[in-house]
Length: 208
Image (cartoon, rainbow, N blue to C red; front, side):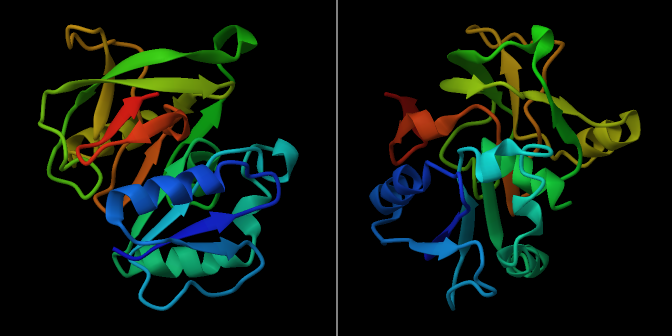
C-alpha cells in the first residue's frame, strides 16, 4: 500500500506515523507538505497525524482544514481513497467537512492521559479487519478535546448505516453509555484515542 502523511506547521507526530506505516506495510510513506496541491501519484492511503497544527489557534484543525493540500485530500476521498485522521488529524477532517460532527473540550476542561478500552463493532473495514467484531482492545488516549458532538439525526444515521467502528467500553466489554468513539466510513476513519502513542503489530496497535 502506498501512503502519504500530510505535514502541517505544528504537527509533531509525522515521523512516528511514517515509521509505523513502514513497519506495517513495508513501504516508506511520502511526507506531503500542507502547501502542496497534489498527492503523490498512486497514493492509496492519506494520513493526517497528531500534534497542534497552527498552534490550535481559532479552533483545533480549523486553519489546517483550509490548507492547499486539503482539496487533494477531498478529491482522494471522493474517489474512494482511504483517509485516516489521528488526534489533531481527526479534528482537521471534521473541520474540512470530510467527517460530520465536532470535537469539544473535555468535561471539567481537563487534559486526559490514560489507557481506555474499546469494543470493536466492525471488522470488515480497511481500518479494522485485523480485529474480530466484539473484541476488546486497550489503547492510550492523550487529549484535551475528546468530546465528539453531533446532532441526534447524524448519530441516528451513523448507527443506522453501521458506521460505528469502535465503542468505549469497560475491560469486560460492557458498553459505556456516555462516550462513543466516532465512526469509520469504510474509506475514511478517525481515531480520537491517541494511537500515535502506540506501537503497531500486524493485527493492530498495542500500547508501548
